[in-house]
Image (cartoon, rainbow, N blue to C red; front, side):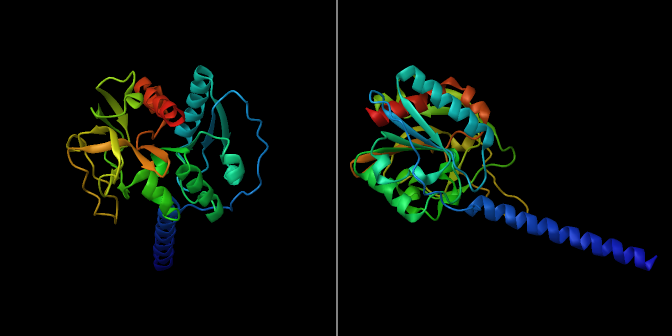
Length: 283
């Protein structure tokens, strides 16, 4: 009897250790990613001479928003067919070289998370934007897994990510358009609409940014507390930005924290905002 009890207790202890280790590995992956390496081979791309080129980058080494990534790919290709754009879609970093980036009008970071590019490739993005290019980011591209790329955090997001709500994770909120937004970014959009998403909470308002859309942060449940993480029970207050843009050198960046799952791509207003953002980027 004692032996059986001892075995049971040891089994429970082993299971607890495995669960704790798995939890730490999961948190590490979410915050840092597990890169297998950085791709450096330049791809062969046939750029149409008469179409603005969009680089749609969907690589992940951290948490992967698989369904949203796939839905976004479909949506951007549909936009391209409608507007006469060329989309080059990839999950490899070899295209991030100065020579090929010059041929694109805008880089779209499609929910990419974790460590994505090496130092030389990151610098190529910096030069691309600061010399007149545009960079767009969706949802996970602004989370805390990009600490190895401080330029991205500073110049695309402009704020440090803290957490997202967990109970419930997805919540409906009223999206409001900022009245003073660039007319190109809010064309065809209503002044407000209801949207369900995973609302990111940042530690501050985005710095040096022009806000395009916001929600009332006091009307959502913002707590991100889970297990031993108990300091995430706060939001961004009544004025909670969810889409904004910044001038960076001669170029510009646009970011929206919306875009967690496939369902958001069924929201015509959300898709229209991103279509406007591409038009704004390449005009």
